[in-house]
Image 1 (cartoon, rainbow, N blue to C red):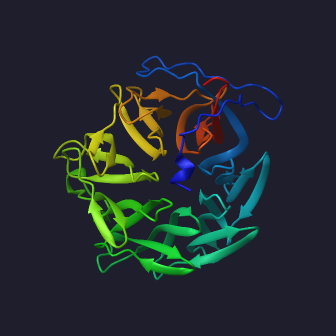
Image 2: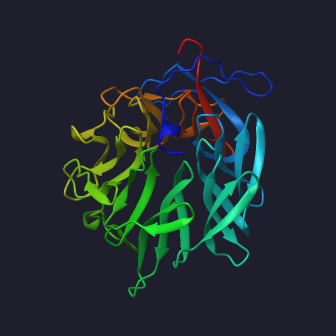
Amino acid sequence: MRSTSKSLAILASALLMTSTGQMLGAGPATADECLTTTDRWQAVDLGVTGGALDINDLGQVAGFSRSATGETRAIVWDDGEIIDVGTLGGPRGYASGIDEEGHVVGNSYTESEKSHAFLWYQGTMQDLGLFGGYAAFPGDVNQGVIVGDYRTVPSDPYSRLRHAFVIRNGVKTDLDLVAGSEATAINTAGQIAGTHRRTERVGLPASQQTQRAFLWENGAVTELGTLGGIWSEASGLNDQGQVVGQSALDAGGVLQAGFVWDSETGMRRLEDGGGVARPKAINDGGVIVGTHTCASGTARAVVWTGPSQAPALLPDPAGGTATAGNAVNVHGQIAGNAIYPDGQQHAVLWRLVAGG
């Protein structure tokens, strides 16, 4: 649930420990680390090779696991239990969103190797299909309402067009946007954040990327602008209608920065401490999580405690590096992933420490 599930307004006060009782702390800092690592959160490896992509306010985490043979399956973590959501018959699947009622959305291959959208609820997986395209990808779910995009191939064989959609009460509707759009997040008011005017061509240079972040509400589309460059894209939305994402800073479209947008102040650049910020989610109190890249070129999970605050690195799980923060719930639990020395990616959860 990429609106209220990315809330961090209430600061929890519980130490997070592994299932064996071992506390996980921060890993070693890199030599060129440009940010300070916060001690307000601690990290735990969720015990799965894969990734944690979303979390609801009940602490249920949606994501995927990857087997030694490369098969991926959609899974949900629920109070220490790993629930295998599975696939639609093919070798790959993942869960991208979960709401407070336990609706889970994601993407899965079928036996015929088609990439379908799905809805899973109370143990039953529903195939949502392709919507007339060749692949469909739900981005978020809130109160059972699903948003995402499906892909089609137009007459130009080197292009792929994305079409943003919303599903309410089982009825799918394309958002009234120009061709080339995706819906990333939906909040409890039904506002939808995403990106449109995106035509992806093979080898398309940054100078030709002209997509814009948008906010959709009751059929009206508001373009959010840029930070001075030629493109922007939205990744997160909260119940106050604040949107986070990235924007180009220059006419060439190469230089980029993270942003936060609201209807009163417009688009503002996030503090980045001299690196490159990629925010993924914003809570109802304005706390933001995502990733940040310093001079080493390694992305790491990061948190902003407010849109005007400097970012702080989240601690690495023991032995893990190259972390990413993907979602956060009202209790301060942050879902994400980390890379380990063997090259495997593991699902990771961060929680606030006592007094944090």
